[in-house]
Image 1 (spheres, rainbow, N blue to C red):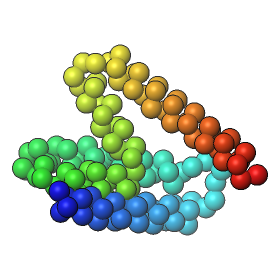
Image 2: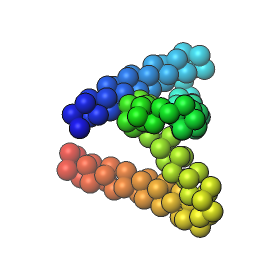
Image 3: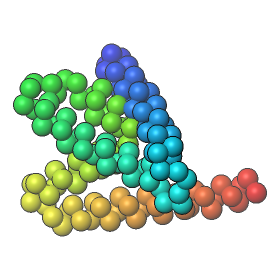
Length: 126
């Protein structure tokens, strides 16, 4: 358990660092923008890498690396990759309604929770 937790933590530290570096690189390459280009870049790259790893791990017997790669590295890089994987898993299993509901609830509730957190924090710290 401790070694798995250490792998997740190490992967998370690496992934978060790569997310920051990617954001810096996008900012330097494209300049400042009101549109969150760095976050979209990270989300798309992370989702692509999650898809590649899931297949490679299954085909090459690397599923033991999942805590480090999927939860840690890619989770630290972008949690959107995990969201994308769960959505595709539902779609591939033929659960289109559940996939749609998962997308709507995940995005809607997450944005709503963030808005509520902003409102409450502004009330407390104002």
